[in-house]
Image 1 (tube, rainbow, N blue to C red):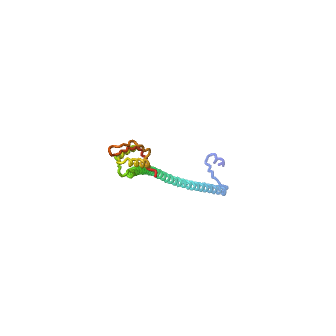
Image 2: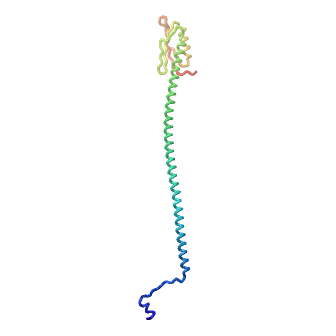
Image 3: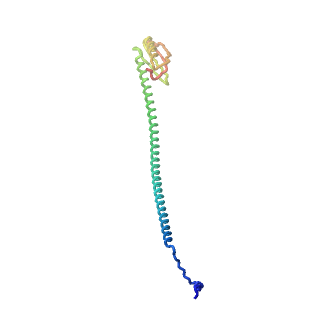
Length: 192
């Protein structure tokens, strides 16, 4: 048989022959080294990425905690503000009541002083027959056995600090009594 007849029949077995084994070993080592570097790089990147994600999640949870604390603080501040406004309104009401009571007390004290001064101003043989105070207008009727006593009463009453614009309405004599009718404006609290 001829050597080319093998080829013609199609049964030729070809074997690969490695003439450069050191080069193949070098390629295998380079591939291994490349895969180790890629694997290490991927693991390092994944570790860094995981660490950064952990830091971000920690920061997010801390921010949520801070936000919740801030909202709670803000709600507490609003509650305190509402309480303060309520207490301030109550204080204003109480202050107004105190001012009203003080004014009422001063008014009553002034009336008491006026009545006391009228009893002190009335001469011994004279007396008040009527005393009327309405809307700051004062009317006094007095009786006396002596005319001079009514004159003294009129003079002293004009000098009383709680009254002003004292006017003599009537002065007359009925039998043995002298009658005096005065009108005046009541000033209220005296300026002493």
